[in-house]
Image 1 (cartoon, rainbow, N blue to C red):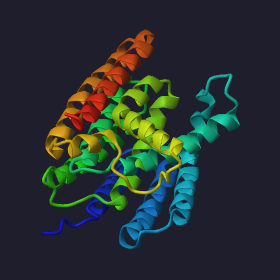
Image 2: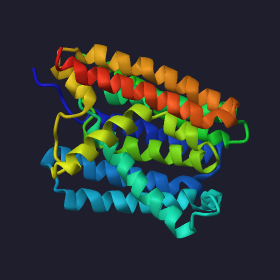
Image 3: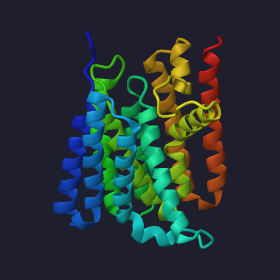
Image 4: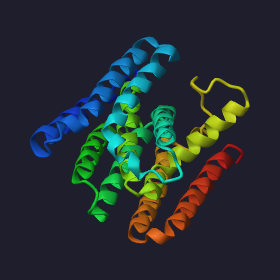
Length: 291
C-alpha cells in the first residue's frame, strides 16, 4: 500500500493558524511577523507544486531567496548585534545565505520515517527552553516555538516508523524556514552557541555530506542516500532505532544548550562536546555499513 505524501501541508496550516492567533490576539505583533507568514505561504505553495510536478531548482531557489529576503525584514532591527568587526552588509548577506542553506538542509535530511517530525520537536523544544532560561528574550519566541513543536508532534504520531504518511517538501521546506528564523532570533540576541547546539546533528550530517558531494562535483540538489543516518539504515538499522539514537543525542545537545545559558563562559566547551558527540554518532552510523 502506497504511503501518501504531502502530510506536511497540515503541519504548515496548523502553524500558520497558531502564529496568526498569537500575533493578533496575544502579542499584537502582526506587523512584525507578517513577512514570516508570507514567506511560509510562498514556500508552501512552491513546495506543493514541487511535490506534484518536481519543479526545477530555477523555480525553487528564487522562491526561497524571496521568502528569506522578506523574512530578514523581521530580524533586521537586531542586525546591530553583529560583532563590531563584521560590517552590517556582510552580516546580512551571511544571514541570507545561511538561512537559505538551513531551509535546504532541512529538506535534504527528510530521508527516513520520523526524522523530520522528531527533529522539529527537538529544535522547537530547545528554542523554547533557551527563552525560558534567558528571561530577557521576547516571550513570543517561546510561544511560536511551542506552536511548531505541538504541530510536529501531531504529525510524528502518523509518521513514526512505519510511517502512514510522509511530510513532503510542502512540510520540510517551510519548517526549515520557520525554525531557521527562530534560531536566528536567539543567535542575534547573544545565544549563538545555543543556536548552533540545538540543531547540531542536522548541521553536521548535512554539512559534511553536502561538502563531500561538492568535492566530488555532484549536483547537491539532487536526491541521494549518502547521509550518515541513511548509511545506518542501509547497514541494517531500522528507521525507528536510527531515529531513537538521534533523539538520545538531541537530549544531550539540549542539556548542553541549557548549560550554555547558565554558564556563558563555557559556551565554546559545550559546543566542542556537543559536536564531538555528534561526530561520534555519525561515525557509528558510517561503521554500521561495514559491520
